[in-house]
Length: 119
Image (cartoon, rainbow, N blue to C red; front, side):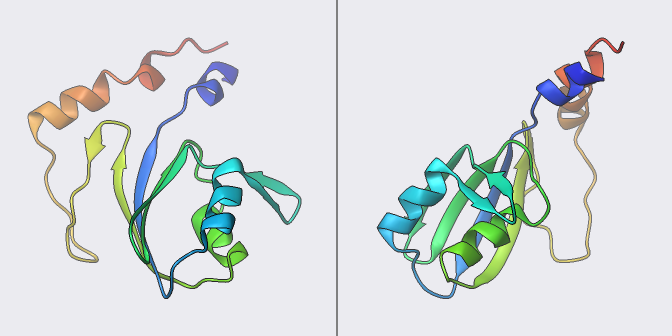
């Protein structure tokens, strides 16, 4: 089971805020912060335009992005999961779902997480 924890599924999120995150605070977030005794460190944060960011995480701890945005004293307006590993989720309407293509199913089934040896 420890091998499974070592393998990480990269998750990409679109985040929209009520105002821009100051550059110095954005740098702090990129290096990682401690919130409520827990280290929060993203893989990356890209400012796409003022108030719009791409957060890339490898863990997805409880409310991790909202906690980091709150650290910047900024409000999260939109938080949308874009992809998990190589599975692009697109932008289905809230509460809706879509069928996975055969290519998406095959790619998901070939994930190293499924083939990791268990002790």
